[in-house]
Length: 112
Ligand SMILES: [Cu+2]
Image 1 (cartoon, rainbow, N blue to C red):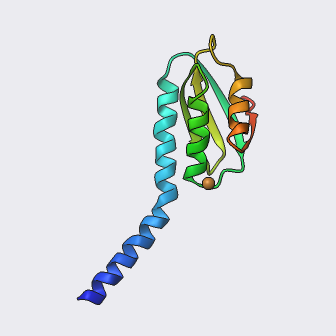
Image 2: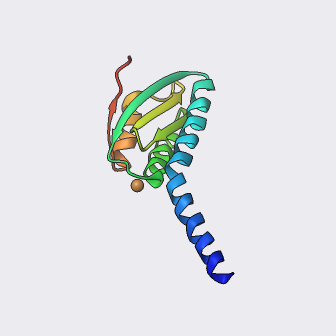
């Protein structure tokens, strides 16, 4: 009984580790929907160098700290970053600088 419980716990642990990237993708979808619904201007960036959820957290916190940025969604798996902002207060150069300062390389993604 104890052995089977330990096995079940081990299976649960490994499956939750496997499920983690999917959970991150779901979090990105949710955050991206908020960016989509936010009023104001939108920007999309391509960020390289992110490899886990804490990397995407760093980038999204750095973006939210830029005055005028109202929402940000960061997907470390694809490097896609979408931002909603007030164009009177924030600009893309400030956002690129914030991403760079958080330790990653960013370029503005071209439309289409
Ligand atoms: Cu990371």
